[in-house]
Image 1 (cartoon, rainbow, N blue to C red):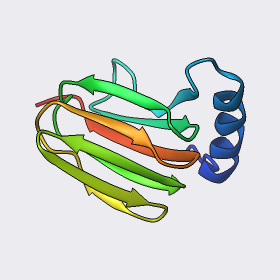
Image 2: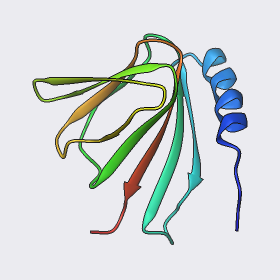
Image 3: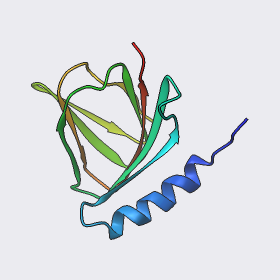
Image 4: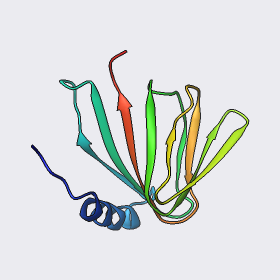
Length: 110
């Protein structure tokens, strides 16, 4: 069993995001081409945005730290540390309202 401290990883990635010109940083926690499940930890500084993109399939977002807003169509969903949400199957974007860290989980095989 592989064990990862999401707390330590979140802190490290948030420091990287703070020095990045895009204001964000991401690292794969689990997954890859040989897996049906992909989990990516994404750190974003306040105001950073993951631009609008297609839904990758069935996916969830868990906020580990801070506050974010997920826009999907005409809807906006505010999430904060401790929240878990199912990402709607449509184009969406993500904006950090504060420095934030999220865990994106995607089922890569239909």
